[in-house]
Length: 561
Image (cartoon, rainbow, N blue to C red; front, side):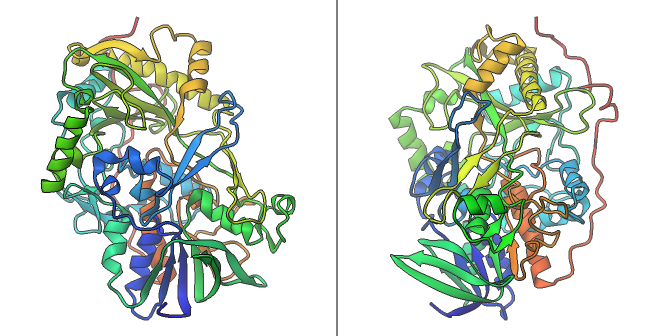
């Protein structure tokens, strides 16, 4: 090891940790240690975008967490994979690039995260981004993170879905990450030159040439070392040996929405009752640690396709071989996309100010494990209610750092969340029923046309809904009694300790979480370094002026019977 003592110790080489390692090591006066439990990300299954279902379901690359039986999902235990590899969850995710709606970040500020409104966040989204197309007030080139739109919707099903959304009375949007999120249009992904643009590829690998950055892999952090109310280092295990390593300046937890609250609790920082129950000595009673847990749920709306043009025709071994060989040789073709190339963001009802439902369109009918849902051709939309009011928790069950914590999301506990999913079913049927999809749309496979009443929809959702793998908000930023970190990401009541990852979101944004997590780390890096923060943006945001009176901008051309 280059040094026995470091200025900053970062725990977790994921979506936030890799960003911090890069930005903090830009200052040659800082000596940085980055600790990761997993190992190398040098796998074709990680780097090739189309193989996304493999690392997510592989123990080598992901913590295969399970929730407690979810009481409002028929007591199902839900899969909760989290990245355990360089790049963290950015190396195992679906690579969908969604910043969230501007109002999501204004909401953060309203919850006590001062200066984390959209105007202050947008410059950091831009700082992180290398957009494949033209820069403007919302998009930027020359940042570390590659973002493009895949194969530009070559399959006609993508464009038919967008057209159907417009025929159903919704806006078209050319860039949901720009001025107007609401509507239907092309989807963006973190892919560059045909390869996954994880934070390991985009941020960490370029920084690893610096002499002031040390990266340790295959190391499990046990806890933060405290002297009174000050963090002074961490204890970790590697190859059967335990090490205590000191930090001159700060310890920064970037272990994610499961890992960061769990490490805090193992360190004696958290709700007194939780720590006592786990036989962990209370060093600092902080009630919000592990509370306020939020996630997105979604289900698949699946249809048979009347024309043999879906990706279901590419699932045989020979087709997969051809796709793989082309990708290896040229980094092009179907191997270079996550296949989510069109999408939609809509509001579930009038009186909702900004979108709370999200669509990912896939020109195939398959499961998250990559297997086909039925024989023949099909297509599907992933649809979910993205602004849940249900709240869960992360709890350490004992002092053993190798024991998984208790995870409970309380999915669909709140009636508004159940109502949101009823809207998902009914509004989606209306969209898919539009003329634009007539030549492609076959039988509705899932949920099935027999699912109609509120009770039938609720029963279907409880049985079939899945996590979108967006756990967040378990160490919320703010100033109230459940806040864990202040608006400068410092843990309340503990000196020299920060949390920087998706756990500090006050509320979950309307969209996939990788982009806002990277943004948070970019802004936090400037805060930590004491640099002047980027000036607030004056870019405008488009909101439907009639949102209080109408659910969409126009009447549908065809209503469902």
